[in-house]
Image (cartoon, rainbow, N blue to C red):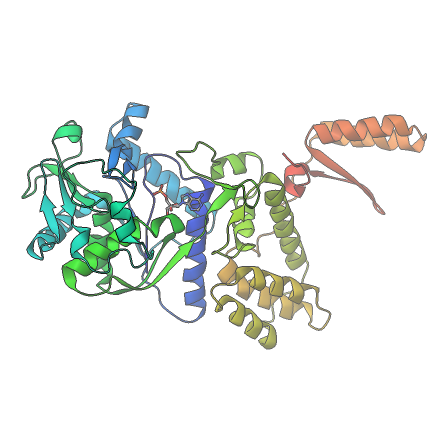
Length: 448
Ligand code: AMP
Ligand code: ZN
């Protein structure tokens, strides 16, 4: 399995992370079915330009370095570490291997040479291009209407480009890229690879061609994966991958009026920001599992909070069950398996887990082993004990004062104190056992 990985010029946002939660669910489901998964993820650390569709703009990696006054290496090193931390916090199993584009330049040059031999590549003063007109089924993954594109509105950014869908294989240290820092020798002079070629070269190197499953997000269908397929199939006359799976976007707004979360749009949140609000990062994973991977997920704080509450309840309920009996409940397991094997229907799988938990038909130990078994797919840390946060003495004092106000029937004062407690980020509930206070972010009642 090959997953297109991050471009490491900035923190990943939670939209990017939705895509990796999706590929992790796929991988866990394959493992649940008894497959051993060899999983490769690339790290783009050169050549990803700001305007993907036209091969124009600047290299995002060099933009990142300039922004922070550091070297590209320092930038990529820093954001790779941050990315791995995010994946770990989300219980995403690490790939068998991460491969960096800059560690595989030789393989990319070899692939471009092969494309020249097969007459799919052409040389221009600044760029080596792939000639999409030479490939009769170019654009098949996205069902692109290439004819329309050619005659259509897209003005070619580079007049030396033969067809508007042609894309860069190699950029020369010339013209608009004459100051590019990252550069390697090649048969076409010093330069650096285009964005797509790294995946074709590394997928073949580590997994062979065809590989089994290739994943990414939906935006990759029309450009990046279309071009990966074009390169790999033109060069070697074989499919690149047997299966392609694409995750839908995390979006903001309302159906019909949604905008995608994007780094370039500036409307993004990072996992760190969620953690800083006191929310368990796995609440975000839970939220992602409540939507099918091929459906848009509408993000707002309210549904994140609801997910956090769901996760907390699930853990609390499991924590209160007796010890596992060591095997799952057979009919429930069968239902679960058919849900996840039906194009990864995780929302249904979650519902099956909840039904099992609430059912009176099974005993506690059976339920526990079933749910923990399912958690090898969910990856929600369901066996984690629910931590009871320490309540600061100041809050305890306010609770006590409110109790006193209630005892003397001073409802006005009692209400005021309750509000104060809430403002400090705590939630008070009156239960038959007296008042109970919890940190709001733990209970997740507070809607930010
Ligand atoms: P990048 O690091 O920009 O190369 O993106 C990493 C991955 O995140 C790619 O597969 C993108 O397609 C994907 N991606 C970007 N924005 C979103 C979003 N809003 N929701 C889901 N995936 C996204
Ligand atoms: Zn890729």
